Length: 158
Length: 158
DNA sequence: CTGATAATGGAAATCATTTTCATTAAGGAG
DNA sequence: CTCCTTAATGAAAATGATTTCCATTATCAG
Image (cartoon, rainbow over all chains, first blue to last red):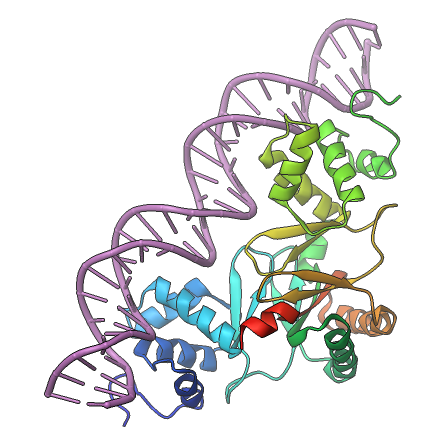
């Protein structure tokens, strides 16, 4: 029964229980946040945001939880080149549709794009299949990102 | 005329002079190393290696030079998820042909693959063109990598 | 309800990378 | 070739993200 911070039968509870992990308040708070925010959050962003509704949270726990979620495949971890990792939910009701990133190397702005994902899918599948076979790899995911300068940063560099 | 560490008319000298940068011993040593090594070197790897033939080199200079080379587009910088950046020459006589990376999330091993690059090129070009137009981005480069478990790490995780 | 232990959080430690600043050395001018 | 300006360097210190340690707390199976 829901109580306190709203312990409910979330979609990910089974994933936790089946894997033998406990469902704790910090973990729920972090997953809730990731589920309702569609930004590229850093560990500290998450810490600060969760801290508002659950002040007892520790930054260490945020890092540990994120590592766990990444290992479980529930969360993607990205590097956009600004020295801190970014996290995004990979599945669940609140998840954005499959997308990749366009990163401005000038100001760090990141745009999610969904164009060409269909054409890409075929290529990706073929590549995955072939690489799996040839190199005996079990491929879990892929990352594609384009780097360049956004409109504003193009002007500045002139 | 070549002297000391072999100051020669390397292919990249013009790039430096045209941009107003000086051609120095540390820079030459770093570029020489990158040119003859086809591994995914970290800043410290480069420092240690260059240190063997030019012991006066400082780690700071390695970082600074790499940043410069990345900005000039002579070097690619990658993140394979192990907390340190990796560098690879992007052009020049000793450069590997266009490739992407297959990263084992278990042991960190990285495989360069060149399969499907042709098919990929078309997709990438189309995507670049479209994204440039739609988001007003000047795209400089792209990164594609597949993440998974190598043969050995698949066994261990069972 | 209770006990075993997984999970937590604060503080300290780590570790890659950056900054500071006094010294050195490219390389154009003379 | 020598001098001079200043870009480049390197050692040490600073920074900042992430991890480790460890004593305490809270989950949840029985």
